[in-house]
View 1 (tube, rainbow, N blue to C red):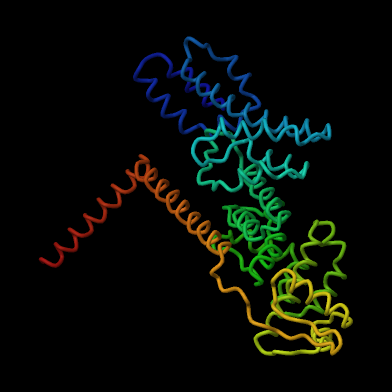
View 2 (view 1 turned 90 degrees about the vertical axis):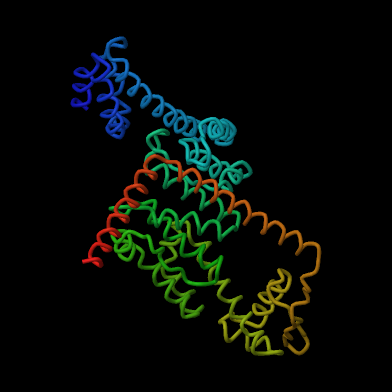
Length: 393
């Protein structure tokens, strides 16, 4: 930072040196932002009239720091006073004022935090449903930790609301975030990613292809019980899964993942019962109880009745005979509900397509992109000319 101050002192005298100073300060924005807690000390050494450009850069960094500090402190005060819900509306309004297009702001992670603490998700889900395409840390003052916390808290909210596919997407973004070390936030995201992925797809998840090698290596080291859970689930072994959860009950409980683990076991049982419908028309409840380790005919009946009520299997139970008869899905997919659902999904695809098109148009006019494209075209043309010359010779 001393170098920055020296350059400001040396290049604030004339127009030619001001241009050089501007380019220098643009390159040093990251260093200036990192000194947000000491900016007042540096500003005291500058003269507003003589070092105007330098003062502007430092004040801009200070303003970013204030946005971050205010959002964080508001959330902390409300949580400390057991009124986290009081921070929801101010933080939501901050997002609307600070946000330019679809970017992350300092208010995003703290809105999610107070929403979790108050168990009030109506405002948070509005924000979470808006895809984030930009993270302008230089302009907003966001650091990596806040970005990771936003996606982690967002994943927790979607998991609580049983929107497991959306939760998986948020946790996956954290896991695939560029990193040189494994952070605690990414570690916890991966643990929950395993369970939410199983609950949304019924399949054991694989790491995203963009996952850092360092992160991948360390996840294997710190997630032993979770990797075992993946292995047993993949083998469709509900008995071993139950034993594993009992054995590592304290581990899953401490991580607040015990409920998700038990839901995954139920998911495995239900999918196993669903597979039976493809092979059998009639089965005894005793057979189902023994095959899936349910302990008794009563437990088997309970599981199947619950699945029938939720529309997860189509069957009838004959209690006198102790049998279950499977049937085909009665849905003809011609009802108004199906039509409404299809219209909604089609509209979501159209909206996403428009967002991608808009983002593509914005990228096309970015100076950095244009320069890169011009260089690529130049090198491509030059290479083509060289090849033509070789052919001529």
